[in-house]
Image 1 (cartoon, one colour):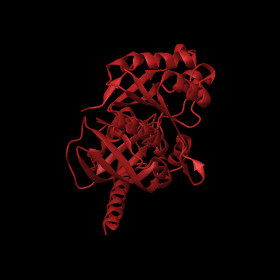
Image 2 (cartoon, one colour):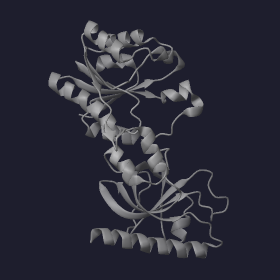
Image 3 (cartoon, rainbow, N blue to C red):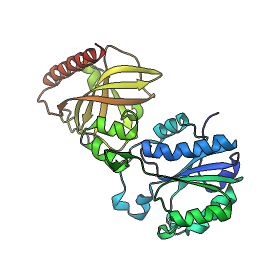
Length: 314
């Protein structure tokens, strides 16, 4: 059964109860988030009800402190894919507005209880709070769970290297190109996802056709050329990727572009949603004075990527 996507609290009435809610921002869906969501899934399976992940769109800081909105770690399609794999029955994208921010914790909880048929449990991360001025803290939520008759799971923070796993740590690791460190915090490979779109066709003219990806992720690593894997259409293909502003092209790009050349493959990926795994940094982005110099360097990059993949296979 496909995971349902809801856009309002009232739509919770359409979900088979008892409803087990995992509530949080869940930016990145890292190992700590998985613990909270797994708690709700376990409750749902035990009760015969539904596991629902409730998060907020846009990120609450986009409303509360617009200048400090964190960059998105995980795009909407990648998030939905992961939640389905984790056994979630429905995703509620609760619109976060100034009106919601001004709603008291008790009124918000009453709305939740009234919408669910019934509310069976709430799972949150330890220290999570909600409502106007964040007055719905742990103790208050524990009291209300008893008076309103739902179970409460406050999941302790998951630690790694003696520090709590957090989206902030993952953003820092990715921005510094430390993919292994980010992967350990995520519990999976770091992936950049998006739809393959038409570009300027320069790569094809140079003899190295590339897939230009409209990225959903906002957190990017250092610009440059990487050995990569491209996951899409049920297959994983060895590749070399360039993330940058393409300074050798007249005018360049205003924002970083991710281009992927799949090794020894000439298929059509246009319109497909793919995920790219950057495995190894080859070189920094640089400007070339001629297309011939660019073509020569791309050929060297392809050979270096092919050798890296070959060494890994052996």
